[in-house]
Image (cartoon, rainbow, N blue to C red; front, side, top):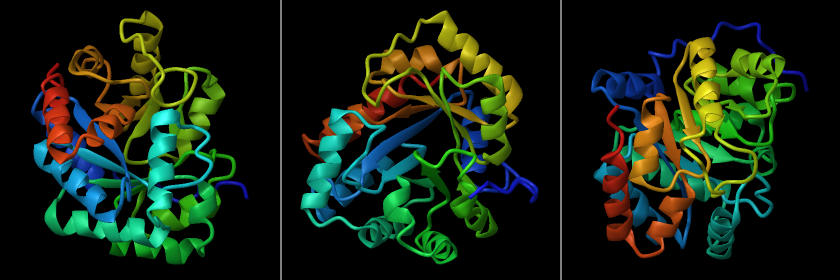
Length: 273
């Protein structure tokens, strides 16, 4: 299952994701990328929270497909996925939520997930279903560049962006391989560990990592893992094209849509460079 790189990369500015990052750059700020789990705590509650987040100023939505073994995620998102599965979450149901978001909002939607539930569908058929639901990109945590072709190639053929991840431990060769298969934006993992881990945003090593990746990537770089408040967002906004927040949004959403919207507005206040 080696990844194919024969086709030319998608024009980063031609997709909804590329256009949103460009618009944020033109406004002199980083983009706010927010993760929420589909069906957490249930279908209607999930929609209410996602709609509130979009209305409050989210730039890009990462919509999580619930999975029983989310190894890259910390306790907060693991628990969210557990609640969602208990509420009857499925891949098809997650796509219905994506379609409902697309009916009301023009922001980019990235489907965030693990290979197991996605590859239960025939890849080309799945990607057509994603496009029909209004999804703009795919981020599959456990499909590394060496093996992502099985899903990335049909995704690109359907016009979807493929979001790759680079970690602090990634070698130069590994980063190059990730960039070969990535379009839309690069997800720069800020630290070793799982989502929700405490992050030191003043770490010069993190700043150097982001600067080197931005210089090399040729497409936007968004940084995530451990970002929880507006102060951290502001500290990172000058070092990246986007800042990704997940666990903090899931936690805020547990108090309801209004609390989540307030959290989005708080975070958005830190985006200016």
